[in-house]
Image (cartoon, rainbow, N blue to C red; front, side, top):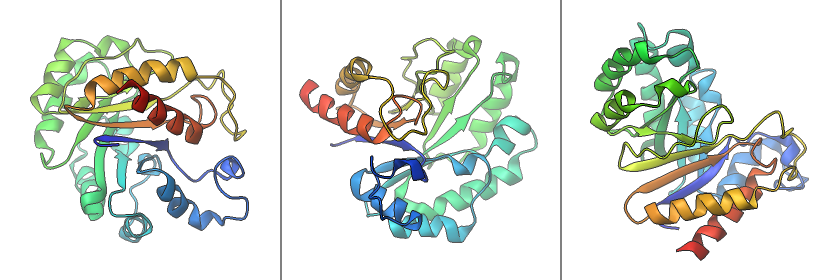
Length: 249
């Protein structure tokens, strides 16, 4: 589907066997199989550590030409240092990410709840110094940040405000860039996420999102990722969403 890339948050889940991965598939082949079914992935491991060159090049080699990787900024930058004195880590991370070349999608800058409005000048300076050749998206957890101060900073640098259905946040529909970045996070208190099956019927929710996406897909690229905590069955969620979007067009 043109300009629409829908995937999951992560792929290394053994409990997806039978429901998604063939039962006899070795875990070393998970990414290759995943990429034969879907065209994008949000890589969660980069949040915990910067991958080495060999790992990134392996991801690239295992996936087809049009596959897209979205990477999360390391938590050392966003959570521990909160953008302060993080130039070295940022430079290394971007250098590794750039090895993906044409397969590199948006880079997600995710902040914790205690990244508050007082820190917005830091964010503005940080975004100003980032290479403009890459796409960036910002996700916040503090609802007080969802105001015009943040929106104007993101618009200035063409950074997408991540739309998220996080249970502690209000609905987000502000468009701040020439692309959209959507995260269907779900609720850990309701969905176990490790059962490898649908635990909560999200069909009505998916239909609502499909209609939103259908109205935007002609004018901008859309990247969206399902968590294992949304319905419990991300692979099924992707297929249902894409099919519903086609009907909504």
